[in-house]
Image (cartoon, rainbow, N blue to C red; front, side, top):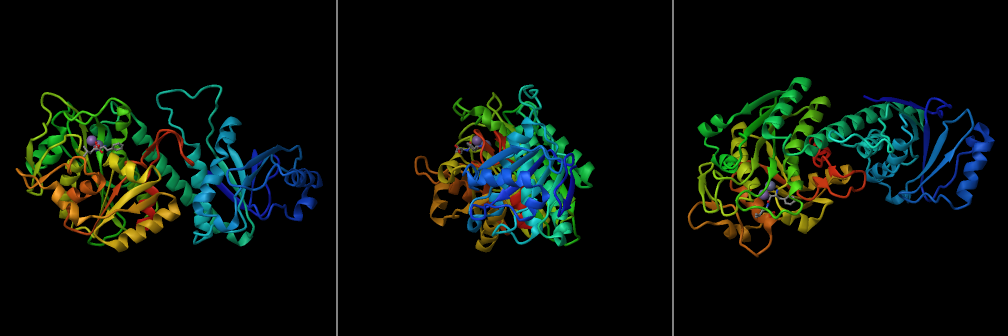
Length: 499
Ligand code: BES
Ligand code: MN
Ligand code: ZN
């Protein structure tokens, strides 16, 4: 946990190792109080600005070393761009520029002046402050479970953040926003940790034991259905995917009772701990990335964790079907037919379309809770990456209003979505000649993200939303405030949507 403080004053020499002054392009100036504070520092910064070395553009930073005892040793001018374009996401991205500097000097205590203007999509000072803390913590995150950090490239962990206020009356709001930002970022980084572990470690059993640990820590209820339970229930779509794996499947049920309201919201996360494609084997290139095929599951765990910590007044149930998808002598074959939990028969035409199989049983299971809403989140189709790239998740719903609300949540959190249609025209494409439905659309016809969603819809009997996070769940090169690896996409989005 970090320490936050907030004051109208700047921290003196040893209260922080870095003072951050954000500036908009249009108002590149220091307040008149600077001259009184320290005429030398004032002159130094005025000169730096007048020289044109710092223009306040986005992604811009200018650091100076100070020798005044009144100030921290380092000061950074941070560009915020144009006032009219300043958003919550803009402030996350702006502070993320600091991460390499913080790591390099192992800075643990920083002071950040809050911008005079609120981001244009912020409702409150709380939200604006939360975004700053999120940007800091998400950009500082590194996963080094299996490799010691390079001694030449030190890492830091922030301990103290001192907010320099413009209006002293905002103190309480700033501190509460900072706490919320920290809580959210930690839930996201927890999700990233789960997802970054390789497939040999983050197995279905590990995922289940992580859910149990979470339940113990945050007073949740957790139940894990074992293979025998799944057989008894008739979850044959999930079992069919598991058939090729030496590891048993798990079906994780995690409940948070933030209220006694009758109808809960159910969150379903795809938990394929490694997706080789099965008998319909994937090509070798980048197959290692399929350890991330449980990012939906990890996002569900992170979301429920944060909801519990925030004491969200909601009833949430997380459902995670977990298994590997591997080829073997016992694996499912293309052409196999199984009877899913709902009673529908599925012809498996491609064993690599396994996500929709395990979700079919989880979505059918969700009905028993008489949910107000079910949201499923899954790294479901490569086609979604083709359609929307890596910045937008594909979103489907039976209810347009829910999508509008989700889009607004995405605008705030920076976890953007784009609506796609549950096109009735394509329902034909998943008809099978031997079973009720097949797990594959028409070869060569495109629209694979839509046919996958239509397949899921066959197992849904309540208000529903489906998120395809194939493009957003991890990054191979790093992007905005994320380093390489899992992004924890969906945690902040779902929480913003639910709150
Ligand atoms: N987990 C993959 C989807 C995926 C691929 C996510 C690449 C992120 C990056 C999923 O199980 C899958 O293999 N889908 C197939 C479906 C096809 C066989 C209909 C795909 O997208 O190729
Ligand atoms: Mn697959
Ligand atoms: Zn998959």
